[in-house]
Image (cartoon, rainbow, N blue to C red; front, side, top):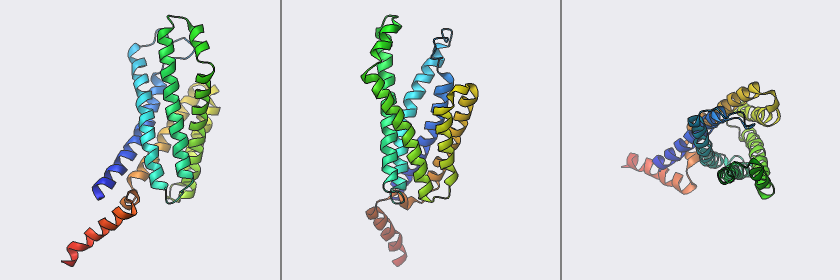
Amino acid sequence: MFRLASFHRLVTAVCLALWAVLSVVFVFTAPPLDGSGDGASPLAAVVSAYAFLAAQAALVVGIIGVAHLLRDRTPVLAPIAALLTILGAVGHSAFAGISLVLAGGADGAPAAVEAALQGPAAALSMVSLVGAVVGVIVLAIALFRAALGATWIGIVLLGWVVVEFFLSGIGLWAMLGSAALLLVGYGAIAVVVFRSDLRDWMTAKEAEVAARRAVEPASV
């Protein structure tokens, strides 16, 4: 029982850390969106694409683990945060996939790609963006309510939302600030997860069986 709980806890912590690190790698290796990156390294573009994909997968696993940890402390906010975050991650991945397919089949016709990305694809992008933003905000509130001794993490996450989605116009400083807040915020959550009580990762039945097995040798 303890080994399974320890495995779940470790995977959650590692995925949260990977989400933050890979997201930063994706941002700093991505070619410019304004088309000025014609001379950019193809290797950097490949690294950015795979980092983006892996980051979304890590985020899904990590947020499910966080919701599991917080389920008794914030039984409403935790699953809502997880649902919205997963919606955002899946939506971002789907939109990125649609964009790549359309770009690959457009034979150098940017106008055709732009037209194809309107309508349902644009709606998908908006839904995923709202899911990502609101998911982080709800997660921050859940951390405030959970009383895990790390209230400041919620403040960092809210700061990241502001910098990432509302201050991107200031350019490099916004990118650096967003990266720092993301690493600190989710890195801190990973530490909280890793240091959490193993009993928080067990069902009531598993905890009962583990407690009984711990007592049995002493009673022999």
